[in-house]
Length: 92
Image 1 (cartoon, rainbow, N blue to C red):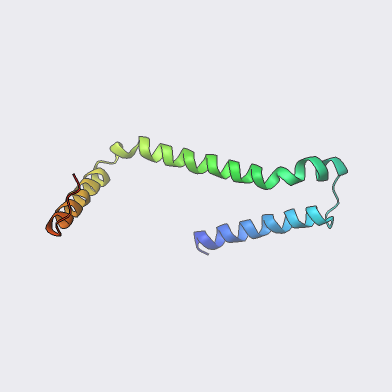
Image 2: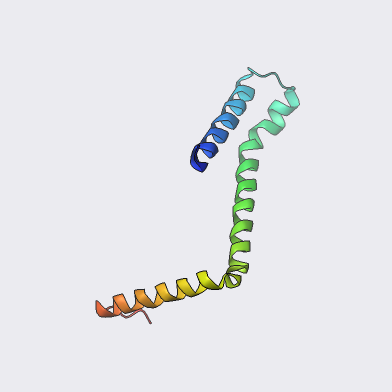
């Protein structure tokens, strides 16, 4: 399976468990159902956001360590500037 299929399968399974807990198919204590269950999607969203931002930050902090990728990106930037300059667009 691809990474997207794995991710979709995990979200579908978690959604099914959440739905089953919410409608009472899976029994849960009343305090859990009333006080914790409504906030689980938000907790998951915040957790995923923190995870994504941390990986983005790590990628930015270690970008200069990848010299080949850094040079490739700078070359692409120079090519884009030359392309737009030939079209009469000034990016400076």
